[in-house]
Length: 317
Length: 317
Image 1 (cartoon, chains in turn cyan, red):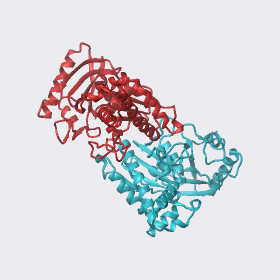
Image 2 (cartoon, rainbow over the protein chains, first blue to last red; image 1 turned 120 degrees about the vertical axis):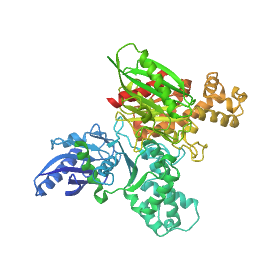
Image 3 (cartoon, each protein chain N blue to C red; image 1 turned 60 degrees about the vertical axis):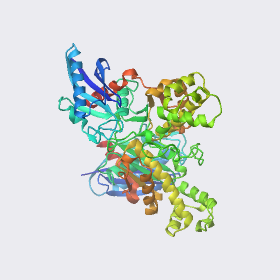
Image 4 (cartoon, each protein chain N blue to C red; image 1 turned 60 degrees about the horizontal axis):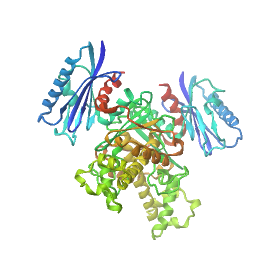
């Protein structure tokens, strides 16, 4: 008999569902739209039906050991999703409790960046590490920090808000209501903002001058950089400098062994990684200099469901 | 029979030695100069003799459970002191090993800020806390961060270098070879540097205009502030603003319950604390706003030996 866990990743658009073993082998996976149901109870019922469909499709004998959920604004301690700006259901939602109507196995809920960090530890590149950080570069910037083999949740469950460390107190407006947060510079959105800063600053020609703000994406910028577009290259350089400095500061606090970068923006590859590494070491306290590994996440394209399901193994072991 | 531990605090000038029980009651304490002996072996022998003198002075029956040592540049994992700039013995010194020639009880070594954090948890204001930070404001700025009830050492034992988070990349020269580290602004030394910055900037009269750089101390500035000296008040305000911002950033990462301030500079009292609290909350991510306690260390005047001896109880429990 094999042991399996369910991993659920709740995104603003889609919800990914997977049934996965301890080694990361995926036995079933599917996806449903997140926001079509008015009532959250109906949405949870949809997920339940997907899980049941998945369970029936598995021909081997298995035991379901638990359910792991990665979600925005998730409170690990309470099993709740609290005022998630990208979800239609308002207030504090007892998400784990809603699932426990259908399942008696343990249910764990955490935010997506924490799930990514746990996934890296259970299935990915951090299998033998006890102190590392995962920085997720998507629409925003998230982080999951593992200290002494355990995810750092902090007093109230909301540790790891690296995206809201302020890098410039007179800097860009942030959705959090403050100014100059790291994620206003380093994220898919931040990258786009920097393009327009630099288009205004420089006079060099650039293919990016033909694209309106509303249509600019991190992928457009990465493609332009690969074609040696001056503005695109400067954008990655500036982004890497700000991220490198912040990772050097983070290292001074947590003294981790490695930092993994994760998410859409990392598809830019060496244009991003080489420069982040350069600026990180250039700004690093000497005792850590050239000792901290900067790595790409090893979770691959199924990272979302892997991270969520990893939560189950991490908690049960 | 009572259980006792030895706490040793190695400072640049003096070494404090105490024999202390689990409740923080001090049975014996003394102090010897740190740097009179050319050979480190002779210095360790001096400490050994002090401990033995102390043991003989205790009339009750007791068992010695361990020795805790707080020292600059201490490596917890290896029991070594590595290239401490304020000590005369160069290179990597196997300090715990030197003591194990005299004692068969467990010997633990950590840096002074970590010892302060453990002391706060065992004897002080953090007895019931699992996630908190202690920030020590002395000649430099150190920190000990407790995550989930354990001190965060990081991969190599050097976590908690909050004093070397960079707050201004074009800022003041730091002894670490970089620019703009937090401790160049927030520490006894940083406070003095700020005085001279502000004496140059403002034209207001100040008693501090009569004191040369080499004679200015944090205490002089605190005394002037209590007499409403304009420059001294502005100095504390600027110091508090920089520290408050940094503590808000630290909170975003670690989501602790409380931050304790410790060390000489905190004797300034409410002139410092009220403003640090104001600027911390002003710059705080909303989910943490007005939720993080800013507290004065409760270890009192014997903090150094209490912190070191607390290491023993913390490790054995």
